[in-house]
Length: 334
Image (cartoon, rainbow, N blue to C red; front, side, top):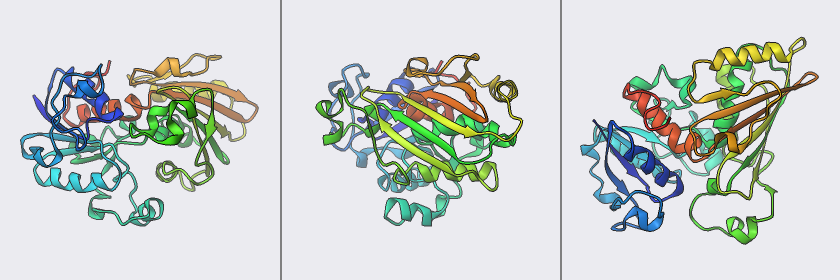
C-alpha cells in the first residue's frame, strides 16, 4: 500500500485529488492539509467531497508517507518539496515551481528567485505519455500545466515526424475552475456568466515558456508559438484549437496515420474519427485527452479537449504516481 499525503487539499485541484486517491485500491491517503481550513472536514467545504479532516501544514507528518502531492501556489510549493524530499518522500508538484528548467526564465516569468534551483534539472516534466520511462526512478515530478497538456500532447508526434513548418497558433479556452478557488472579481458569476473573454494573450501567460521549452526538446529549431487563452463561462474543461502549418506534401491521411500510431496504445488519449471534432463533453470528468484532426489546405487544425482538473491536474498527477510506483497506470482513473 502506498502512503500518500496532500498539501493544499481544499482548492479545486486538491479536492479532485482527494476524490481520486480515496478510491485508489493501492493508496492510503494518510493526511491532507489546508492552512485556511485546518480542523474542518473537507466535505464541509465541498459537499460532494469525501469526509476527511484537514490538518495544518506544520502538522503534516512528511516522514510517514511515500509520496507527497503539492497543490500550493508557485513559490510556496518549492520549499515544501525540499522538506518532503528530505523526509524521504517522493514528490508530485502540481504548481509551476519545477516545470521550467532554467532559473533565469523562472525569474523572468515569476518575478522572484527560485527557492530551490538545485532541483530544477532533477525534476521530471510529468507529461505522462512522454515521460513514462523516466518516472519510475524519479524523486520529483513537475505536473504539467493544464493548457500545456492540451497543446503538447498532440504536437509531439507531428514534430518528430517533421510535419510542422512555421508558427503554431494555440487558441485555448478554459472553464472558470482553472482560475482557482480564491474569489477574484473577474471570475465572479456575474462577471463570467453570458461572457467570453481573452486574457494574457501575446506573451502574457506563464504557461507559454513551459510550452516553448518542451517544443525545444522535441525539435531544433523549435517552431514559434502564439498562445491565446480565453475564459469560458463554464465550470471546467479546456478546449484548445491548434493551427499547425504543414510541410509540403502533408495530407490528412498521412497525418492521421502518424497520430493513430503514436497513440494507439495510450489509454488516456483518443483520436477521433475523420470528420469529428473534440468538445468539452468528450473529456470532462475523465482523464482523457480527446483529439480531432482537420486539414484545410496546408494547415492542420487540431481540436484537443481535456478536463482541466483531471487530465490537466489531479488525474495526471495520479497517473504519474501510478507509473512512479509501477502500479497499473489506470488505477483510480478508468
